[in-house]
Each structure stands twice: as C-alpha cells, then as structure tokens.
Length: 264
Image (cartoon, rainbow, N blue to C red):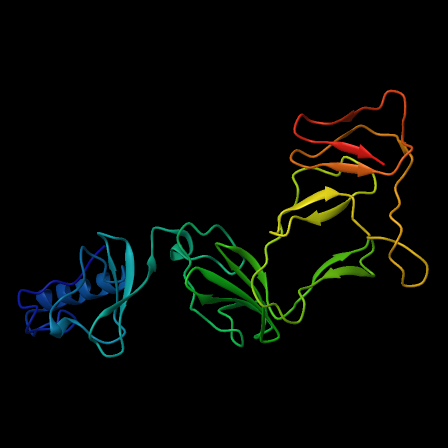
C-alpha cells in the first residue's frame, strides 16, 4: 500500500516530481509507480488541491472503500468495498441482500419494480401502501387494513386444470363500506346456509324462503315432520313448528329456560 508523499500537499503535486539529483527524481518516480500499482491506497482520502484530479482512483485503507473523484473534481464517489466479494454488491446472478433495499415511489403507469413489462409491477400508492398495477392499471392495494381489489376486479377460484373459474366481485356501486365476518366453524347441519344478522356477522342457519303457494301466492309455510338431528333452540329465541312432529329415537331437542318451542 502506498500513496505518494509531499511536504507541500496544498501547493505541489505529488505526481509531478521536482527537478533534482538522479537519485531524488528516481525515488520520486518509484513512489509514483508504487502508488499507481496499489491504487493510491492509504489511510483517509487524498488531500490538497494540487494532488486531486477528476476521475482519480484511491483506496481508503481505514474503511477498505474504493473511491473515484467525480467529474467536477469536487468530491469522491464511493465505488465499493475491496474487502468484500463483488465490492459488496449483489451480482446479477443473484445472492443474499443483507441491507435494506429502497426503491422509488413509482406510479401505476411506471411502477418502481417491474419484471420486463414496464406497466406491470409494484409501486407505492401512499403512506404504508403498496399497489399492484397491470398494463398500467392499478388493480390491487396492500396495506395494514388488508387487500383491496380495485375497480370491481374479480377474485377467481380456478378448477383443477385452471380451464374455468368461479369469480366473486363487488357490485358496480356500493354506497358505504360493508364487512362480512365468516363463522368460526362449518355448518352443524347439512343444508344450512350463511345468513347475516344485519350487521355483517355471518352464521349458519336455515335460509328462510318465505311462504309458498301456486303462481305468485305466498300463503303456505312448510316444515319437515320428523326431527332426525339434535337441535338447540337459539338463546333468546322462541321456535314454532306445524305438527304433528316426530322426534327420532336418540335425537334431542334442547329448549333453554328462557326459550319456548310451540308446535301448532
């Protein structure tokens, strides 16, 4: 490691030896070649306006950083760490990134991260929000609230060979936000449907179809005549059935102390 020395760094160039005896000039030239051979390496950065030039390379042995002087000859630009493989940079073939990767904000038409299609990728839509854009159109937002599908986009469930799918989507116009919360378990009774309590809480229950009748009549309420599965009247509810009703052997209907079951 070597860096050419001078007793007058601010006034004379270390790379331009003064006239002198043959030995003195030879020694100065030897110092210059040694400095070039070791990329002007020494502790700290070179100093002295006469010793600095645009595009000048050096290694700071205190930090192992390779630096180059900028085009304006006003500052040094760090190129990498000579003690690290690939100067500490991630090679194009891939590897492990140990630091934080920060990208630009981007936009839906020019996402900050794309995979070859310039209008398809990831970008920052707002504070703590990431947007997914496809062909320049924002379709998905990810944030602390969850996943939002934009512009009535589908959520699709494909069949086994992905030739067809079942899609769910929001209506064209929604006047206010609606959250539907699923029940914690599967239906205890075959044939039950998801029903809402009017506040978005879904539960399993018998979907009331209303009265039936011929044509457009809604007159007749129908129920089964044989109870084949255990059942408990819902707390705080009363129940009614049209009889006669038969309860199969081994089947229990539980009516709580605050509920009633009326068979008409």
